[in-house]
Image (cartoon, rainbow over the protein chains, first blue to last red):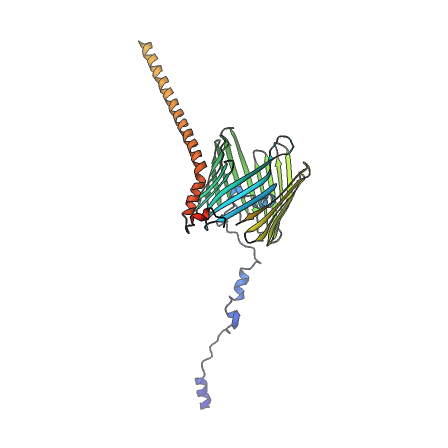
Length: 331
Length: 70
């Protein structure tokens, strides 16, 4: 009896313990916490913390990227040489036909060739892009971050002919869940626009502009609804234009886009449907239009920094066939 | 006498109005002249400005890299 009693004292006291998890389970957080934040419950909307909307002029950016590639006719060769991480020079040669806008429905093409020299300076705070052509035209773009939220953008096309130059100053202010922009252009053009997030997926915006020399003014409204998989936008303006677009991201590599435009003044209705395949070595965009235009644009990566471009546009209604090829060397 | 004074007064007012109009015209002429000069300076100087800013940024590129195709 005595011996068993002493053994009992020698044994360490058995304290009630939860069994320690072994191995990986000990490192990962316990499962009960994960279930609480899981996807089963609908997420509560934090109305005071809405995301910042896209800038007003980029409201249709996905649709424009898919449906309006830079189609061209002829030969195009671009060479970009980076001297620095921020500074690059570019040389570009184009030989082909450029379309001249005509009043009749005929297509007037003018054969032209030009060489364009450009310089880019890209800094996080300051971006300067300049391009000059052989006929003396200068395209200049400046983007400067004056403060964290205020950005100044200048866009100018200067020509040697008098009265053909254009310039535009934009002041952008980015707020917590809104953006606003004020524009001043030549020919006494003044414009302002404002866009606001009203829900995590929906943002609404409006713009007004005033043309001094022609005493014209206009107002427009826009709405954009986007989720991870789709973007739908609608824009209506007092110039009589209504534009709707819808882009669906079918998978990581494929997007489909469609677009509808109605011009009340000219009673013009255009609708187009397009696809955008972003694959590892190439990017293929194609579109079909209600005006009878079928177009495709292929950018194929041949090697590191060497891209081949093929462009085709077939206008069955006007019997106008445009095919172009080119190469882009450098980033 | 009174008519003479009033005539002089009108003349002064007319002269003042002409002065203001010519001052506004002067401002407009000068601003147009300034815009024209600014346009010419931008046209010729924008690309050289980018090149100068780029050649002075870090890491400094060499001068021959401007012309060589490599």
